[in-house]
Length: 320
Image 1 (cartoon, rainbow, N blue to C red):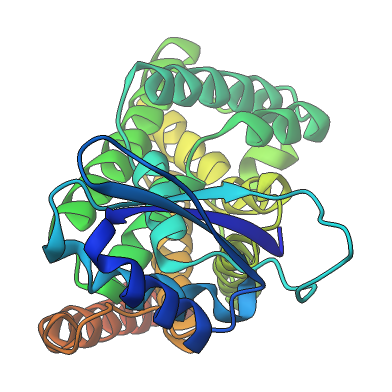
Image 2: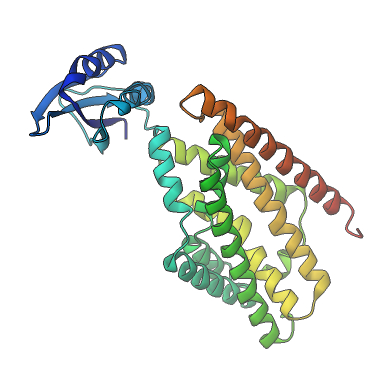
């Protein structure tokens, strides 16, 4: 959404500063709404995406003036007469709120993981691609993977830990369900869809990279991520379920192939996601925060790149 309304609550004494910032950052319209009974005032600033991030960064410099200082970001469907750019890019703060929600581990996340894995296994065993696609629509694996890449670009350790924990538990839970399925099923059915997830080539690497890039571009542009979530689920859910099933059925060689596929996909999604966040200029607001984030960014690039090289070597040398 190109236009958004910022509601700023600040001390009355800060009115001059708020007006000056609004003028400097190209606010479309600015007006003073009301004064509260505790010497604070509410301002409304209509903004477009081209100036919003710089405006919010400048306004946040006033937070030390009052513990009640607050910025609310509200969507605006349209304004008359028309104003602003057509870009729908979200700010760093809006992205952080989305990422925190996607990285949250709760009952709904586990339930969606259980249901999507269950449906995916049924589709794989029946060799029914339509059922597999249906499973990927409800798979919740997009959130934690993009949240980890986003947190790495900002050096946000707490969000990194939460995203890593949520993603690991989700994939591990899916694999465990597959193990139980494979153990009780006892044999590998003649399913092309199932067996297709036990081998991976460089085309699979390209798919995972495309999924990560598409996910971040959709996220940062403010567009719907439903279809992109399906792409990430394509890369992670079916091979994870297949790995568990093959391991439970005792087919360790086929399980290794599926594990290799899911590992490559997770690494590529995170590496490509991190690189796109950096290319889009996602970084901390203050200079010392950017300095503290630098080791996380460089470390993330190095670790994911080394893991990718190791996995590519394993793909090219299947006997290893």
